[in-house]
Image 1 (cartoon, one colour):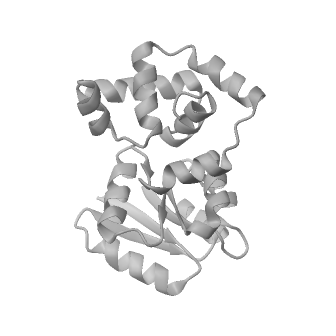
Image 2 (cartoon, helix red, strand yellow):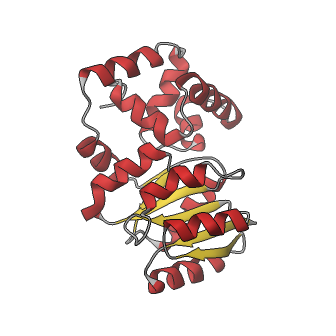
Image 3 (cartoon, one colour):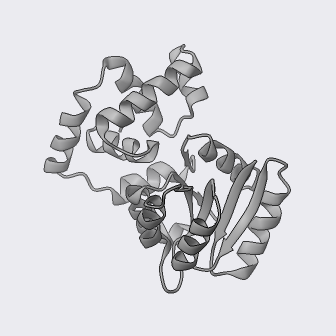
Length: 216
């Protein structure tokens, strides 16, 4: 059972997401929070597997809350919810350690899929918005690109292939199919990539890959 938390200052959004997630037999919403501070309190009091967090909220916004949630003894996976007019904040959230993001008009089935994917250790980048958001707000400069390229040199050619697909938002199953590998082998490659690049999750690895010019 995936234990979820909804963090949003809009009561109707919390209600709607709670109803949606609780209709999935493998997901249970065990906590709700109205802002970042409340989310930290709830995550400390409950075991949370996946937290769906809004960006703009009173007292403490979602971006500020992410590293604090990550610092908990049993940190939850984090999916940021946003709208297109908050694109810049989404990049900041991903860089802070979010495992993915959803737009608030995402199809309900995709929201459920995202929770399952993130709970299993994958990332969920909205298929059409991911490139738009990161490319628009992740302005690569030469020093940053140089640092990223240096870190990527430690990867094998096969690991670079895996990283390039990961940066496109591909799941382990997608990568396995496209590269003719077993999914267990892809998981092993991803684990090695995260360690070699000194990043905490797939999203940060994807950002670094873009910095280095590994993907267009």
